Length: 395
Image 1 (cartoon, one colour):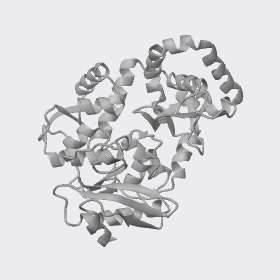
Image 2 (cartoon, rainbow, N blue to C red; image 1 turned 135 degrees about the vertical axis):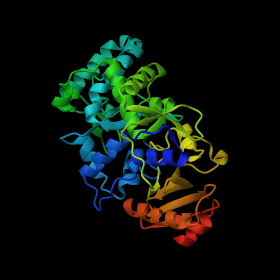
Image 3 (cartoon, one colour; image 1 turned 60 degrees about the horizontal axis):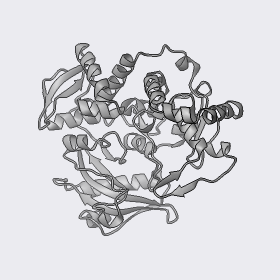
Image 4 (cartoon, one colour; image 1 turned 30 degrees about the vertical axis):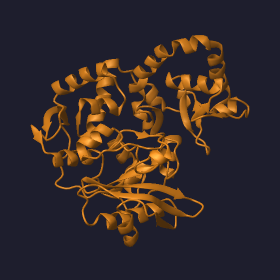
């Protein structure tokens, strides 16, 4: 698709098509459906917040509809392994074939944390030897059951945990999976990453950076340089040469987008559908909205997650999901899965400016579908927000 300019509407449709919102629905999503979806998103951000559903499950649901979450466990933990965890965006699942292209990042972490290693060299070597001998292990396994101590907002991690994190970041260990407590299970890369992937020639830094920008561009469809940089959390000095190389090869096409104040790039394989028929709730960690400036530029949607904001100061709520209808974000809802009451609780519901008349009815249908997927028996709406009354009537 060769264009010199895009309207706002066209840019939205390009972006949503790139993220998989025009892929044909499957009545029963399969592993093939999941892999197609991850091919669109590139990564699945991992987050421990479980007030609704863990973050990495949500982008799959938003694009595939109700699916068996065991599919993701199979893809990430069983052979043949299709996904693996690494610092691809932040902590994220990524296609296992991307492992070689993260080697330059692993080397950078070795340089960045050289002082840490030098101060704890004996302990780091000991922890690595224990994993070699024991096999896949959690920090708790290696600490012989010693409890972690909660300290303020975070954890006061043991020295073993710190050593494991260092070994993981630097590529000397990989994540074999997560246990029932959502703890990472560490093992040697050769026992996690398929041999055909480990045996590949290691890309140069420049080759790896070009590949990451190429994938970011394909997942975005149309993007500014800052969007491309954020997708795999790269630096300006890495992205600019990669963008230049991809422009020279014709893979990135410079475009002007109506209302954007920065230069944009269109991936040469990007699709521009006539319409987007989406009806989806988006996780706060969904690639469509995780870069807040991009969400404002694409949708005119000002979005901030308020998990760490004191409750009296929150504007919309603790865990607020944007509601995508067609190619617009038309509402936002503060959701909680009350598992004891078997209810999906809407703690607040708010319409966006210009939301269509059918917003409440469409949102009600989506909430009922989500409740069913989560194994909850119904939806409860609290009287908070300008959309709450109409939403309750629609339910």
